[in-house]
Length: 315
Length: 122
Image 1: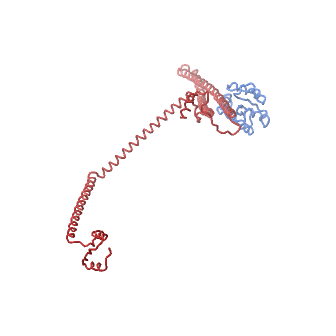
Image 2 (image 1 turned 120 degrees about the vertical axis):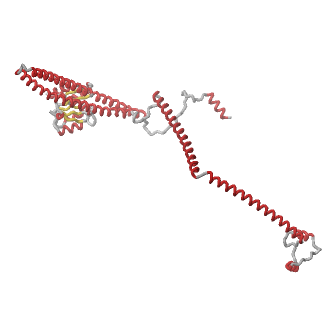
Image 3 (image 1 turned 90 degrees about the horizontal axis):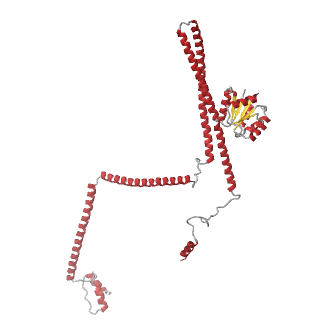
């Protein structure tokens, strides 16, 4: 509803404007709407009511605020209590202990897991090794092509090693021979001395037959000479044995040549087999059948099984 | 008296050397070579009175050495004894045809070597 200039001025001046009776229904509706607006003029009762209601609302709000404040206080108290409890009950040492215990438990768990894992691996490896060795012993698996199982290289190693050891044996035999030669030389010196002693004692014994000591010493010297002669004979016999041993060592050379003959045969056989199996041209890997008619595999399918399988997959 | 011992086996060279010493020779009386090629070099540098050689050796075998000695150099008339494991009749004939003076099959004894040495040195 539009207001006239006069009405506006009256309002401004705080004067009541007398309501016109001749208002339309539209105007009535508008008035009812305008009642809610503050600009609507109100009676003192209404104002009093309004004021009282406003006071009640304020009281309610105040009550709510006070209740909220109480709740906030309660929550903060609880939180403070929890903080105090943590501070009081759990010291820093305890925290360290707890963290260490946790770590130890975790480590123990992981160690147990690793040990179990390792023991499983070791057990599996041992089983696999035993199984493979059984297969190799039965001749079902070949020896792996390693330096220790390559035939020619092993034979070559044997030949070279035995050559080296034969040289060392020969050194020992030569040492004994040389030592024997030294003993023989000393023995000869001893014999030479004894010969002179015997000659002297013989002369003394003949010149002084009444003195028995010359005769006794002469017999002792002759006895010693016999001993030296026996030593010389024994050493000569030992030398002969050593020479025999050296001669027998020729069989080392003979055996080495036998090994070399076997090596030669294997090398020629290798070349022959390579020539026999090799192809003239470059070849491509061809697909080969896993199961062929006549095989004794348990996985082979019969005609009936084949039909049954086809029928089943055709459904 | 100077002897040249030719063998690829060091053990065999020592055995022959010992046998030679048993026969009254000393260590200074013989030299060693491990194959025909080295023996040929020794023969080019020194004067020898007898050669004791193996047959099967690397680089140059005993038979090749005998043929070379007989065909060239200063030792064409030197006595040669072949000491080898090759005991076949055909091998002995082959060696004798190549110019070997005597032939010993391994294993051998000092007496046999002495006998053969005496035979070629006469």
